[in-house]
Image (cartoon, rainbow over all chains, first blue to last red; front, top):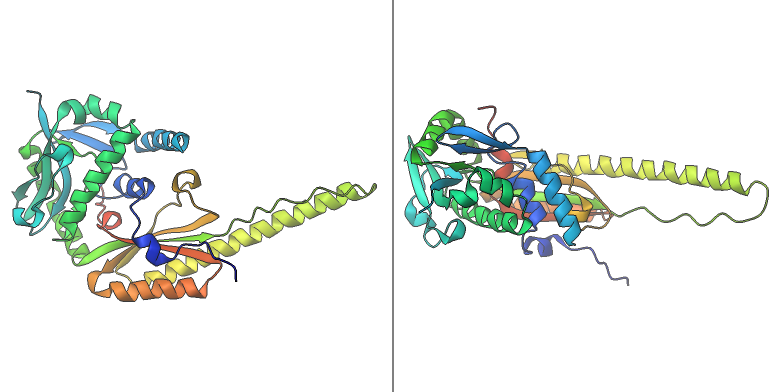
Length: 66
Length: 254
C-alpha cells in the first residue's frame, strides 16, 4: 500500500499558526478602516500605510528568507 | 521618558480584568481595559518611538518585528475572544491616549454592538482546499521526421486544454465544498488563496474559506469537513481553528 503524505485535518489543527495565516487575518480582515492600516493619534487619523504596498514588501521578504 | 500611545487589540462586551489574568501585551506591558457605554477596549501602552508614525513605517518592513507583534496581537485577541464577544482590531491601531480610544468607541458604538451580537458564542474556523499539481512535463518530441512538429504542437494543445478542464473542475469542486460548509455555519467568507511561496503547499489552493461557527456546533462542523474530505479524495482539506472572528467583524464605512 502506498503511503499517503497528505496531512489529515486533525494534524493540521494542532500545528503552530503559520505567519501567512496570521497576516491573512491581521492585515486583511478585522475591524478595518477603508482597507488600510490607519494610525490614529488623538482620534485623528494621521497616517495611512497602504496595505497593498506593505503586503508586497512583506511577501518579498518572506520569499527571500525561505 | 518618551511618549506613549495606546495600542488597541480588540473591542469586547462584558469582559473584566480577571478574564485576562496572566495575559501580557506587547513588550510584556500589562493590558488595560477602557470602558465606554457598554463596550470595552483592550489596550496596552506602547512607546511611540517604536509604534508612532515614523516607527511603524520603519518597523513594518522588518519581518521579525512584524511577526513578533502579529503573534502577540493574536494571543491577546484570542484570549479576549474566548471570554467574551470580540471584535479584533487590525494590526497596529494606535491612539495617543484613552480619550482617543473612547472617541472611537463612541463613533463605532452602534455598529460594534451589532457586530458583537452577531459573533457572540461563535469562533472563526478556516478550511482550505488543495488539489494536486498537474504539471507533468510533456515528453520531448520524437524525431521521426515529417509531422513530428505538428504532432508535438497538437499534444501540447491537448495538454493545455486538459489543464484548463482540470482547473475548472477544481474551482467547481471548491465552490461546492464552500457551499456545503456554508450551510452548516453562521456566516462564511472566502479569503484570497495564499501565495504558494509563502504558504508552502503542494498543488493549487482552490479554497481559503473562513467560517463563523457556533461553539456548540463545532463537533458537527468538524464532522462535515471530514465527511467532505472523505468524499473528495482528490482534494486535500485543511481545517484550522478556532480563530477569533477576524473575518466577521469588519465594520462598514465609518
